[in-house]
Length: 152
Image 1 (cartoon, rainbow, N blue to C red):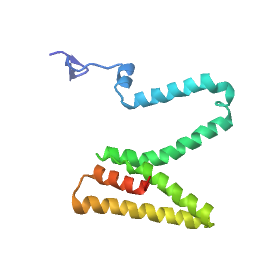
Image 2 (image 1 turned 135 degrees about the vertical axis):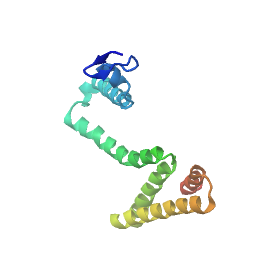
Image 3 (image 1 turned 90 degrees about the horizontal axis):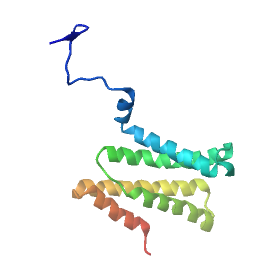
Image 4 (image 1 turned 90 degrees about the vertical axis):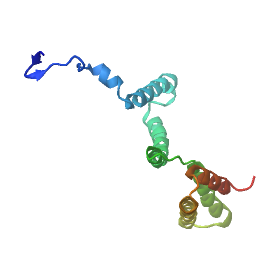
C-alpha cells in the first residue's frame, strides 16, 4: 500500500474542492435564496427607494419582527414539534391590545399586561391538555387556535 507523508493512501478518501464542500452545506441554499431575492428587488425596485437608507430600514424592521416570531417556531421544529398557534395568538394579542385602548380608554401598559396574561393562560392550558390527556400536541394546539379565533 502506498503512503503519502507517512499516512496510508486510500482510494475511497479523496480531497474535495471548495465548491464541492460549499454545495454540500444545507445553509448555502438559504443564503443563495436571500441573495437572489435581494438582487431581484434591487433591480426591480432600486429606483423607488429600495436601496436607500429609509428603504433598508423599512424592510429590516419587518424582518426583525418576523425573526422574533420565527426563532421559537424554528426551535420547536428542531425539537420535532409543530405549532400552528402562533398566528392565532399574534392576532388575539393584537386584538386584546387594540380594543381596550380604542374602545375603553385603557392605558397601553394595562392592555399589554392583559395580552401577556391571556397568552400565558392559553399557553399553560395548551401544555396542561397535552400533558394530562396525552393527546397529540398538534391537535390540541389546533383546537386551542380555533377557540382563540372566536365565533365567526
